[in-house]
Image 1 (cartoon, rainbow, N blue to C red):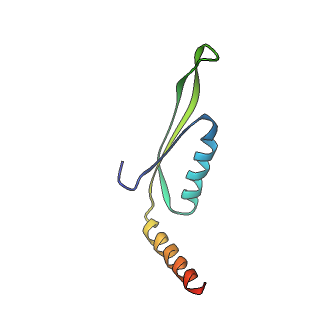
Image 2: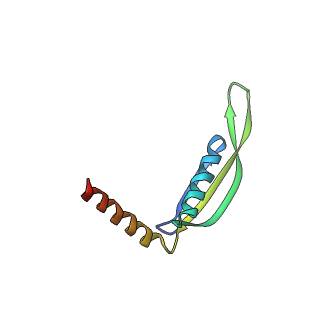
Image 3: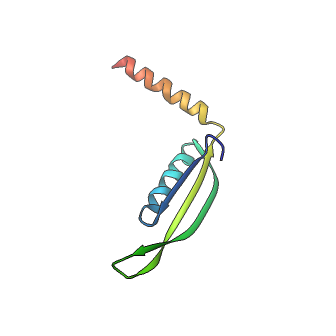
Length: 85
């Protein structure tokens, strides 16, 4: 994984959140999708008395070509806003 790659990983309940964050980063031009991996993990639940499986997703994102330019622009806008305040 390169130093600017981001891996979003979650299990079961927060999968929708992980996908949403990845889509926001991509739609704003900050990231590009590198890999998506899905699998299941075995969870031991003592109350059920047996293990069960839960879904897992890992989305690997990389820095977009425009990332540095977009971040510099955002920083300049933030500085401008602080000077006006």
